[in-house]
Length: 174
Image (cartoon, rainbow, N blue to C red):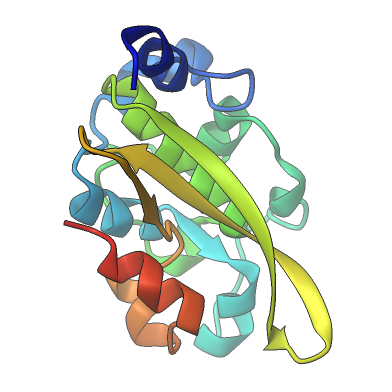
């Protein structure tokens, strides 16, 4: 990777830029394994809500529609104003999708000057015959791009069997 490419991939985009909440992102780790668990403690995928019997917080019905990082962080902080490094109980998390997990992890990497990007593909293992979009984070480890399934923190790995693709992504971590 050239220095110019590294600068580009480590710079925030319109979606990943934390805006006036940038100081709060300092609390997020830049190391992949702890970042997985931090993200899982801030965002709860809509697929886990029923499985875990979570009562969603008031005002969360349209969480999944929030696009940029500032909006995501404001919703998380409105339910629990503590440090972003502190896991929230499921009923106080952003009720999102894999896109939210991937964007939050990407933003944290970039905040710490680690080149990162969000990638999307399609999978049919959630509902046979239906190809649903699935989002992951890639980060540069100094030698190459590494895939990280940002939705698969320790808590969510225990809550649901990882998909075949997700297993490969988790094994990709150093």
